[in-house]
Image (cartoon, rainbow, N blue to C red; front, side, top):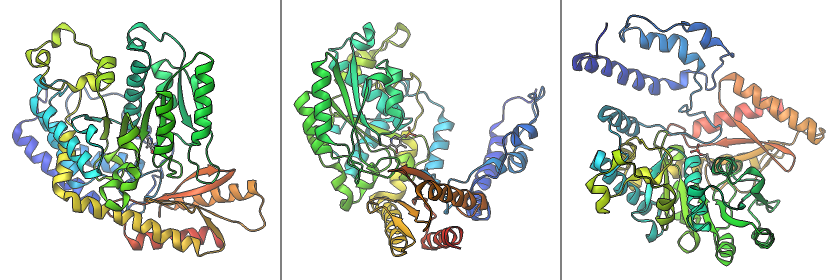
Length: 477
Ligand SMILES: *Cc1c(COP(=O)(O)O)cnc(C)c1O
């Protein structure tokens, strides 16, 4: 038996791993952005059976480099512009390593008081950094993902709408959830998971230009659903949609929610962190007056590696009522005293990682100033790129690009819409296959648009310029 890794061995291999990560980040530009792997490549390279005798750590990094790395798409590459950024930075990685090193379960205050209290304080720091409403203070929690955050919000909203029964006694009547065609798919998934049912998800119209949810149509749907005996449970407004970063009007939608007494969840998974900058604080409009719950992801654009989603509640009582369970084996004096927070009641699983450490490390390293610089760098480069694309008559760029995402399309003179869409997708595939950069796409009004999401810590003007040059090569020559 190889036995457990000794502290001396851990020290030696740990230094190798840190060196490996540092080298990786330092030389990341020498790798093709998108993995060129074919299905089954890694499976064919891996032994079919696990080792009977321990092999130690010596060969692991070499195997990682030889077998695994070809199957990695480099999300931290400065020319990775797909989807949304998934920032990973030195202070964040080290904070997460400390969390693994401590190996605590922070499900209750009693199982590691500091895990709870650091999270409470860091969530308050974030509320402060983003200029969020006072009611959110003390009511923030770190979730693994925005998808979990919206499920927790929905369960809380159901609890409120159903007078405390839906979770405990089964779904007792027909509840409805309101989204738009631009809402993230995790909301429909939440409706399925929560037992609301996909058929009770109402899709509110959007403005064809801005893609913002239409408050008048929401009002009409709420009225007719209530009249037909349904119980409207929750409306989800999005600040910065996944497809194009469109923005629903929280004040206008909030006013409709208030009129009908319905829970408003605001999903700002990608864009919410931009409010670290005063010039982006307008994205919080209406939160103080109308939002029952709000979430944003430091694990996208705010320099913190996955997983780290912040969820805030204006009033946590419905959530606690929906999710608190106290089995005998978890009973303890601190919990019954009511003086402490037990975050297991603020999420779906019982166990929880000490995620606050990495966010604490990131905020302390960068300070508010460093966080602002990062957001401004990404949004500034997006403005420059949109201007370059907009100045070229062979392209059409979406007018709204408030954050780090630019959506545009080559006009392909002489091609009809379908042929133009095919040509755009083919150009994207050529670009991605070249390894020089990575783009993703979306479809709006029948047109395929290319998406360039800027926000990796190492991305600079030269990378944007190079990306534009490559796009021109693949679309105009
Ligand atoms: C990315 C995204 C999500 C999902 O985020 P996860 O943390 O991956 O679950 C939800 N909503 C919006 C608007 C997003 O952009």
